[in-house]
Image (cartoon, rainbow, N blue to C red; front, side, top):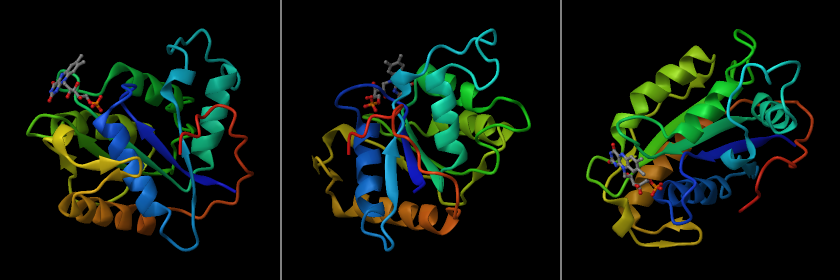
Length: 198
Ligand SMILES: Cc1cc2nc3c(=O)[nH]c(=O)nc-3n(C[C@H](O)[C@H](O)[C@H](O)COP(=O)(O)O)c2cc1C
């Protein structure tokens, strides 16, 4: 079974982007047929080093590339670090962008949202990431901008945010992901390089 791959650009334990990703997962799991969902743990990837990028790359990278290449869709939620993506997220996308022209992201439907405790919801991190994703061959799923501002104060459970207006917004986002996903026939992911936190 292939999966919809979920990525939080923040490693922080109480990350609002982690909560956004948990919410998207909860909404996806209400779909029929129920999709597999996998969280790609960015901690598993080494720093990008072109000297290491030979053959399939280091084992965690090779596994991440296989997972993304077989994904029905990828969903990324990112904070803004000084107006751009956190280094860990950019690092992952750099690994996933190679080899150029035949990367794991080539043709992979990908949707992007952002969240922050501040009022603008880290919207400023999105344009640069879109450029990174497009250059890597990802197919950006068409949807209105989702940038969750003031997210630290939003009510939540382990399943994600609970505020009806946030759920409505992320519901529309998830509708777009569902409509934009692809139907892959690749092998089951081995799950070894991911943290199945859900
Ligand atoms: C290195 C760094 C840079 C940051 N830069 C910004 C920024 O440019 N704009 C912003 O709204 N918040 C910025 N923040 C605050 C983050 O929005 C905040 O830490 C947020 O909680 C991160 O998302 P998370 O909750 O998913 O971890 C920055 C935080 C760090 C650690």
